[in-house]
Image 1 (cartoon, rainbow, N blue to C red):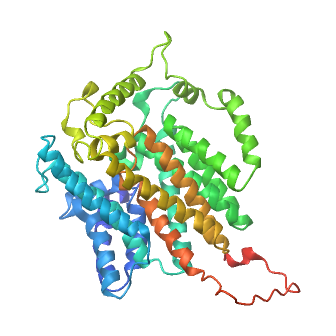
Image 2 (cartoon, rainbow, N blue to C red):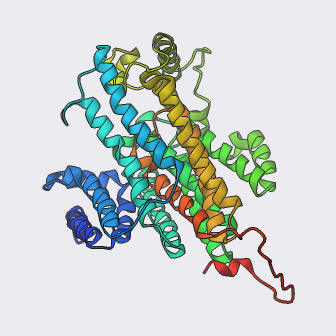
Image 3 (tube, helix red, strand yellow):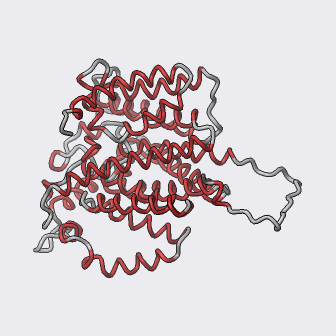
Length: 444
């Protein structure tokens, strides 16, 4: 930045975190949520907090302070099946770790130094994000600000990802040139999943805003899709295509023709490096390339494990302790990993959560009249659909960096359905056609 200001930004954000913790506990937990949101995906910034006291636990402390501040000042969770499913899931996963210990697949989850316990503790942050947002998003203004903060956060991540990409020569694909950007440990594929989700969110959201805001929305979508292209993630490409197809089915039929045309012309219009990445599933001699081949072997191994432990699995967090193909510690398919580690019960809970996310989004889209709420619902439905697809190609679920903001938006979708009170049965509706009403005036 020329003046060396960037060097001090981590310290500024670290100190600001303590300020917003106090603000949240003091009665303004919604402000804490607003501050939390940009920090969720920006792992590379949060990693600098490790140099300061309790820096490694800053995200946890901030989320808990929002929840405690909300509860102590009279706020209560709205009724939602997701609250119950999350509670059962967290309890079951802890029990599952003990099942893994009994089966000899992992250590006892007793302390913070145990890798499986750390995994479980970090995972609990995700439902806590949902709970925190659900407690403090209480009106239309809060929903609007949440969407705006999400847009600004996405823009900052787009800028960072594109700046990194454009500094390299991508005349041909090279695996070593891929980068995780601001998402850090989530990896290049995690960055791609994040970008795909929120490109689709704002594409859907943009269907319901006024002209100037629509242009801004679609500009952000274009920038995000460009950044997605240069992550070279085939899973994210498929997620975007599926999302655009769903948008065509649900709202804009012209997009179905666009998807069809793209399927026949993509090799001519996409950058050479991108087409090379897409077409490299097989080598020149017809054999699977190394990445695809190792995944097939992992899934064959996982199939055997599932057949031996179908109901409870091998225990949550135990896959990392086994010996697998090429020394890998992940199945490269989150659903396979869930089945291997937690069995049919764990998979049932996962499917219930995904169904509830999609249902909350669809209700906001179809059962509300405010364009802001409808846009939120449609955008979220597309983003969750992208999340479902992305997890076929690897674990994109256990990272708050990737799906933390998605759960904030899910909480908003749960709340907005309750904002619009349904008419009482038998109520008389007076329809005065002499007054011309512009529904988009509601979005201001």
